[in-house]
Length: 294
Image (tube, rainbow, N blue to C red; front, side, top):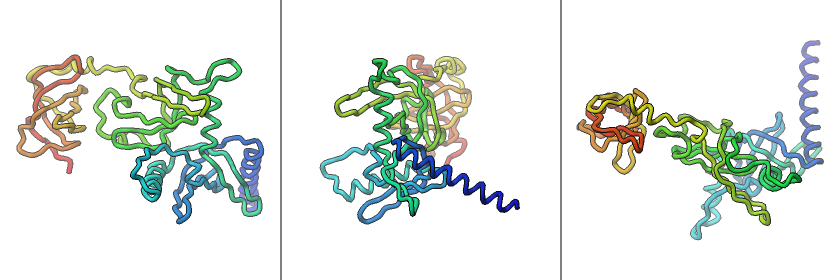
């Protein structure tokens, strides 16, 4: 009896999900799934999503990926870059609009492009009230759809936006992948919106750090000139070594007195020679590499 009850519950769950999919298809209602696979074929590739155990297929052409195109790019090159971009997005949440259903095999083909266009129209263009639902300086929830070393890519109600390191946090950002993961939901401040009603296109800029209090100057006051502090190298840019001091302040060093070559994530000691309050950083030299990160 217990086994029969469990099976009937599973069947009920699947039938309910199937009804939701059919209803969404009939009413053109966007649904949300998780990107779980990228299948590349000779003629065309597809992305695999799952919605409550049902497999949803989205052709590459219906994904609306924002890739820079150069004159020298071949079809093979674009296909490779598109496949790499999709793999970075694995595990993210995305909306889809069902384009077709085969009731016998229960196979489903959908479009992310159409779902995003639906959301853009609803949130970024003037409605019956005479204004859009999202405007500059609004704080909204965004989905993290890809994460790189110095950038995260988010989707904000049908619009993709890349947020560079300088807009992610006030601290030195060594690697965004240490703080964010694909599938996260984050609060962002919309700093700019450009719309084209004729083409129904939307371009936005967003910031994470503008929602965080900047206490860099306050933490800099913990540093004393000619004092030595421990810290971790977060990055080396154009010969300038960026260090996160353990006391909480940011620092930069132009020279390393240790005979070994400093590298990212190395533990070091540093002597502070001066405080640059305009940039909220301590300036000095690295005296010793305590532990190298190899």
